[in-house]
Length: 353
Ligand code: IPM
Ligand code: MG
Image: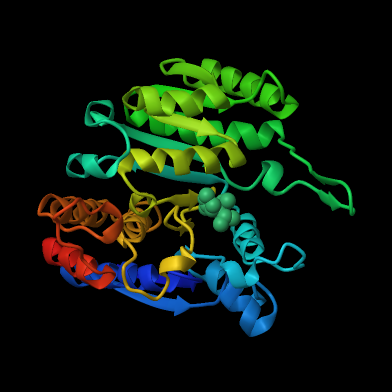
């Protein structure tokens, strides 16, 4: 097939890992006889430096024209002045909103060989396989913000429609898996969470009665994710809780460098990004873990291009490379050899061939 993919390398290690994702996409295209064309555009700090705008109109155009968008990472200390009016992250949030990608799918997959990289005991990690579905275009991230010298506020708003559509995405996915859905909120304190819980209960009871629905408060969920992670199948939650819980969940996998994500709306186009940030401390050193980016590229093939076989092959190649002992610095155990970003990518491509 032919497809147009827009690449947004962004900042920090973003360009490093985007390059790896592209190499793996090219390897898959060659193996399975597809033709992928790429458009590249600026976002985040790189776009601020070049144009003053973290999401220039030309970037939006290229994203809207594409079958799928791949993003590396945004942000860095040089753009982190608390008084700055423009910030790299604004570009990413605006892009998510403009593309309407309200459903952020974050799979938490465990590679048994990496158990030593996780701070948790190996027996707790046994059988961990979950999807976190994070609402991505609403909530406190997008509410009105105010600031004076002495006060600040961020408004958190959710509508029934926004909750219904994300719950449906999560419930459908749970139906294709182990049939367990866990909704996370803070309904003992927040009004938005009470609406979230009411809506979730209603949608699941009326449209997905076969699912087992569990409801957890976010503080308890943070604890249960560590004490009984294997019990979770699909978790659905609002924007900020999902942001926090998925960084926590990445420690089950051993590193933030392992977790991919797909952000989808109602059509097939989507935005794909590793869940990690721009890691400015290791940017340009060639040691970043490309696995999250490469696994995000696999999700792109599956969800936006319908290439499930190719996606599975890439995921399998990551797993085989890891089984064969390929490790970047973030997941290396004592005495093991450390691979650079490009060596790790080459290993994965070798296992894909
Ligand atoms: C993520 C990141 C972003 C978020 C930042 C970079 C704005 O942490 O994708 O998880 O908070 O959504
Ligand atoms: Mg985050």
